[in-house]
Image (cartoon, rainbow, N blue to C red; front, side):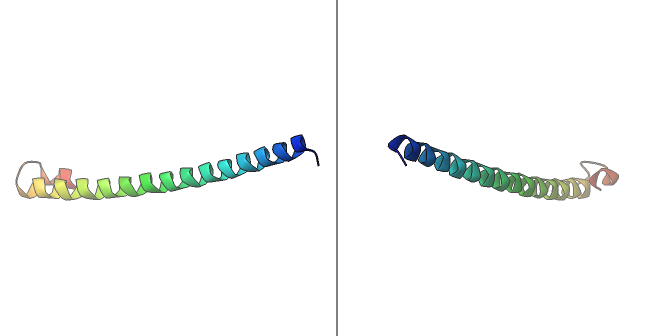
Length: 63
């Protein structure tokens, strides 16, 4: 294998590793976003219930 072929193989391996790392990062970010969304929805529900008990909003809006 010549020097050019070896360099090309190393570049291809590096590109494949980089693509794999990027895909893993995308999956982690998607999971983080879903977790943050669930947490925000739960918190919003608790705030709505509190607001309803204080009489700030109608109780049916806190459902």
